[in-house]
Length: 206
Image 1 (cartoon, rainbow, N blue to C red):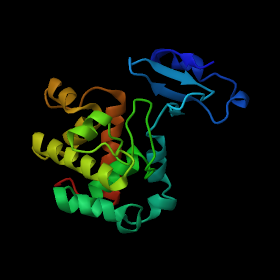
Image 2 (spheres, helix red, strand yellow):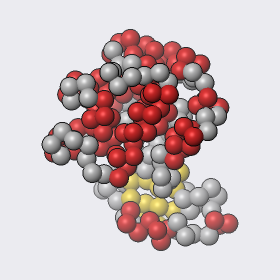
Image 3 (tube, one colour):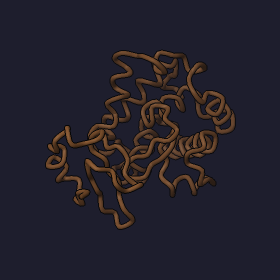
């Protein structure tokens, strides 16, 4: 039976006998906002749950391998990213950095909260920018780039605030006095994206 519980009880779930799990812990959030966790993904909404979703991107900085050892122009979906950059004015390096951290270039990535595709857009954000094709690389990157462009404009081209808003929502940044919100993931997310951005040749004058 899948476990139906809230996130604070996650520690009880990660103790599941690994030998009984096909590939770890899976999770999804239902329409009522209830988070479900299980080692048996017997519902099509389950996706792999990573307690620290930023860990792969941190490791990619320490030991760049595979995709992460390539320059931007050699990475997957570069044509779609370059087109979105041209259309929105958002730096190619920044779009690559966000994708590297958000999805690791996995076009079918889905978070337990339903953020999907290369730039991990929530369905509502994708609709706001004119697409429902979350798993179409071109449509996903275009919508994500337009959202990031608007966040940069909203926060006066302050890259760190725009990234904080991309992670936590613009209202969270505004509520906290136009500062990075005191959320653990956001505080880790912003410098991680900036580090990938710099590694690709981006500058903070963006």
